Length: 267
Ligand code: NAD
Image (cartoon, rainbow, N blue to C red; front, side, top):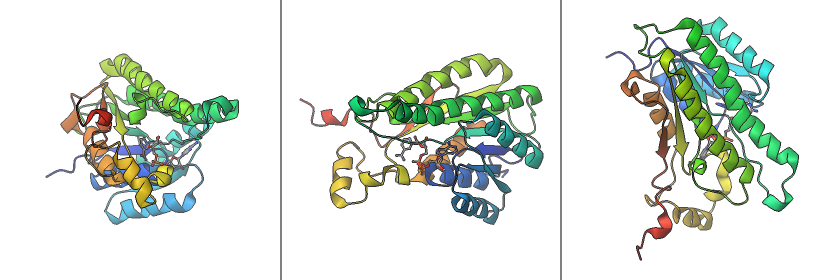
């Protein structure tokens, strides 16, 4: 059986750790060649590249700050030089800079919007330019290209103490849908994945002690934290032709976190 993403190449932003790393590895397992983008963590990026190569696919590490236009353009140029084109963009890079709203500085607000929202815009725009110029290659995929935005349950769940982060993910939702509407005639598919609580360095304090983990489980009807590879497998499928009619939507992967768990007992 042909691998799900055979002959395709992908860029995964922020794939030196956490969810992005798992996504890059799963895309590699599905047969894609992968650009492992990273900001500063050269070691993490190299580990990810090594893991993909060990599974039999191609991979390179490319440093670029996704919030910088010229660096994003340089990353796409490097991807095209190495793999010829780009078929899949996973807009994963993201961060939190938490603060009570009343004390939040403009710098804290801007940092999160720049990386989580503007970074996704810059990468998606470069991807659309490449997909549009190349068009569909029917022997490779039904679509000219696929974009998957890493959103969060906080595209719908408000989050006190994290106003900048929740705003960025709410923005990602309508950015994704608006791009999807605009580029569909060019056979470009655009979707989001919205993880709940996944065990990564971004949220260590939510699972690092039994007390913290017990508190977290109150928010998760399925009563366990998610693992990065669970997001990775879903992204690989969403990027494949098996999901060819899925367009402009968000796939929540959250153990039920968006089911209003406070209402579990009825009333
Ligand atoms: P993480 O901190 O392990 O990974 C974030 C990655 O983004 C890192 O590799 C980091 O180097 C990279 N990055 C940050 N700023 C960058 C920049 N300017 N340019 C390039 N790369 C940059 O955290 P994670 O949990 O793996 O987060 C990945 C994505 O998943 C984020 O968008 C996050 O919002 C989202 N998410 C995570 C969870 C969760 O529970 N872990 C839940 C919902 C959404």
